[in-house]
Image 1 (cartoon, protein in one colour):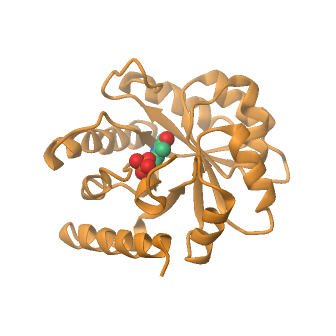
Image 2: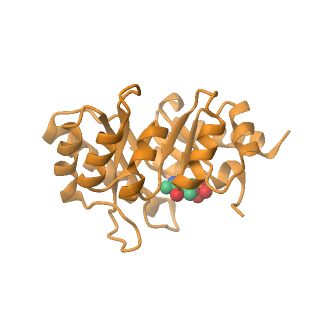
Image 3: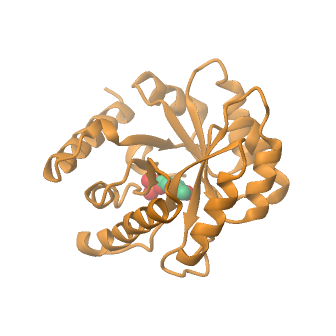
Length: 228
Ligand SMILES: *Cc1c(COP(=O)(O)O)cnc(C)c1O
């Protein structure tokens, strides 16, 4: 058995165990395999083992992969920082964009989303720890940016995305995820909408994210091993 298949088995086992503890349904958690710096052969292998969703951070790296694998019906998620001059190629190639942080980027993605494709699924990237090295909006910016996205028919607002600061303990890991869950409830209440997605949890903290209600975990290392 290959490493990827063994790793996926362990991950599904861990997801199920984490869900049981908090009475959640494992089917409510979507696994996004993060394939940055991974070659096509590994992506194809993950597909054979049932992975249907893939995440990429860099447009130049992602687009040749997406175009090569175009005959496979999988979902591509853009999870990197978005440069304004890349919005067309992102809107043309991806099913999801997790990392919207400004009205300008939202406007450009909406403008460039091709008519023959369904509306682009989007999340707002939240920077809750005020880390200068990470892009993302503060809690007070969520409602205004959500309203802008809701005004574009070519964008579909699905939820919130976060990469929290690395934490040592499970309890510490849970805190930022719980804050995002709380922010989601606030946005739903204020705007009278339903957000069905929390994009949170990576290889080192996905169990804590499941405990706090994540619906989408983005795993790279846990599936493919260390990046080279
Ligand atoms: C690289 C990356 C991941 C995956 O990280 P791992 O620790 O390898 O699981 C998830 N989300 C984003 C935004 C990333 O850049």
